[in-house]
Length: 110
DNA sequence: GTTTTGACAGTAT
DNA sequence: AATACTGCCAAAA
Image 1 (tube, rainbow, N blue to C red):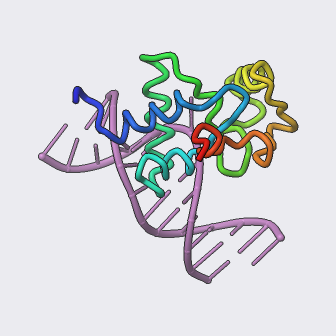
Image 2 (cartoon, rainbow, N blue to C red):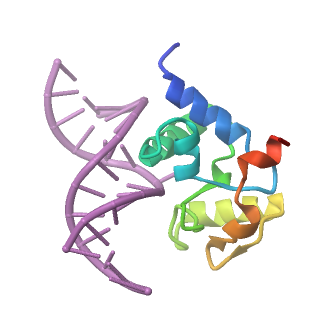
Image 3 (cartoon, rainbow, N blue to C red):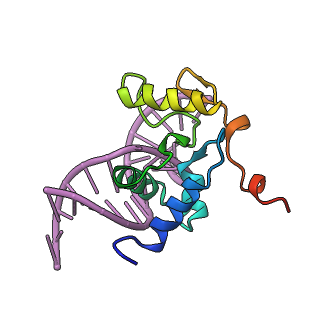
């Protein structure tokens, strides 16, 4: 499996499976990947994979609904821009998880 | 081979 | 309710 473990591939697959206009949280992805407490691993993989692959890391935010970076960071502006471009409205660095949080059931119609 | 870091979450106080 | 600490996984140095 190359250098990537199943967890890595699963996380990457889940992230790549996030529909446009939706966002996922680290905990959610980690949980779906089989590591309910592996949120950090998810974030790390995200960063690592982003450098080698085009990954919608912007759709991955904290469980609190906030972006992963402070509003001062350049990456924050970029992410916010990308999210708004996806149709997601980012207010005060926060996204309405009640609206934009990706539900696994959305792609799995019963 | 070991240690440190890295874009968090959950639980406890 | 808010804050702090701990726990977790993986990759790079």
